[in-house]
Image 1: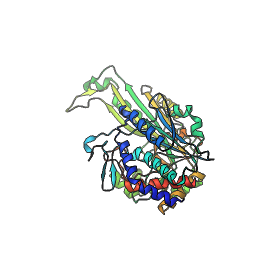
Image 2: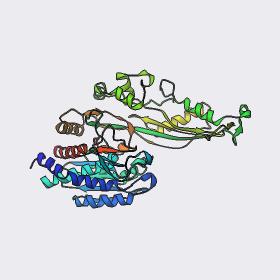
Image 3: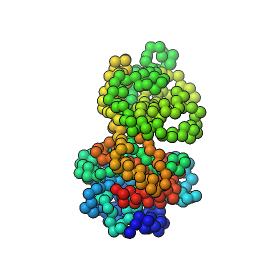
Image 4: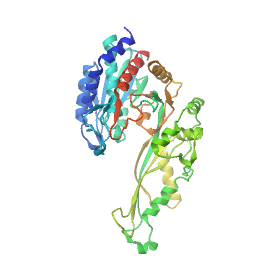
Length: 445
């Protein structure tokens, strides 16, 4: 019995794996629209049980979390975190084929959720099945946590983790939901995610909209919101809230080495974003340090006053905004909300209401962690090249909840997978290589 036999089994089962994935992709399990969740759970229950897993549904205040386990009495346990919900399919008219009718074109599978994250669920399940067909059982215990609300911010995952700590804490390593290849086809390894703070803002300055001829008598809500937002940071992106940068540790020598060696491929980013230069004309190490090590402040939405056709000369009485901050290790969302509130109160913006907010901290695994090293060695073995190692990505996820468990992201996505967008896709070849990668990792782990 060898890994080569497992790889051959994966190739033999390729069509069956594709068909299984397409079955799951037909289910429109969209948490934002509250559709398809029960059908997705029914699917997972059937096929994980067929693969030899025991499973249970962990009820939450929202969608249940599907948990599966294959306990072989091993000393080590490998955990997979995934999600069965997907993004809404809109805008539907930009899809070349129906989003919930999986279609194969030019060696790719196109469907909503195929990259994020249903392709990974089936990739990992089928890898374990192929391994067991050859070896009889895995050499480690295997667990899955598959939630149904990731695409709406995982509002109830903390509740799940608090009620199922032993199921999580028994794990010696976790493969997180996403991953793939860069534009040059090099496999990427992600060591962490930034945290996030998201604010919903509102202000009322007068009792009603006022004729703009009287604008000198009243406070314009649109200006008040704009001035409050402008106060948060300067033109050089320095966030001006006192204490905002407190508690951020200096990067470790290992992180700095990864950042210095990292190939940001600036021209590809510029082409993708449609810009000639990055903000502040940053480049090289300065740009990489800003991206990996600094928090951000970003206006996601801002609206007030008349939005219809033609003109309407009013001074608006209400204004609204949505703002996000991407956080780095050491920052706490609750602490920062209090600091922002005090900053605005001290500077004449008491009327800016934080109507609601949510957020959570960053999470990161050290490159020196033994699990991280095993994942990197697995990629080298399968791909015959060094992976691109991301010390942290700009996006966020609830990785921090899996405290004490090293979490690494790898997967079978690609640089143009269009996750969250029309024509989401994965390459079939990447799907197959992904299964071989998981089999190799299980064997190595």
